[in-house]
Length: 160
View 1 (cartoon, rainbow, N blue to C red):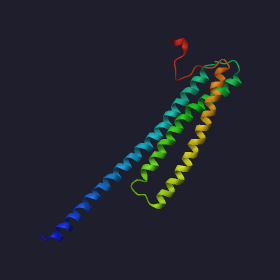
View 2: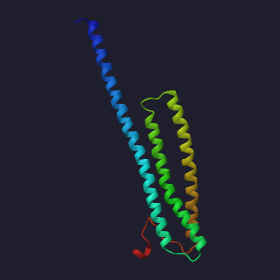
View 3: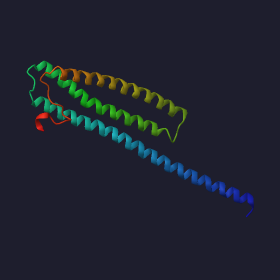
View 4: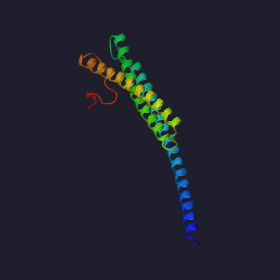
């Protein structure tokens, strides 16, 4: 075998290995993207279930004499519960979009990612701003000493 044939054969073999690795990478990225999107959907589902449970619990317990104030505070609690899960889902969706561009970073794909990332980042930013405002409202309401339901994520002082 001549030296030229050996080099040619080695290059062909290397190209085959590279193509095989690229196909494995594409498969891995597809599975990772699907996993991240599934986690995002699962976050929304968990948030929906927890928010529904909280809504039922708040509806069953008449814990505040002022019904209008109780309704407003209930909505704040529900928005906080679901909003946190939505923010988490947006993070996973953005991660899935970034992962999807690793195998085929064409100019069109990168442009789409930039648009999607910008939209999701703005959504997440404004959702976090709103959640921060709701958390602050909840904190101020608790400081007023009003008859407010105990937090659902911690045991009450009476259960210790």
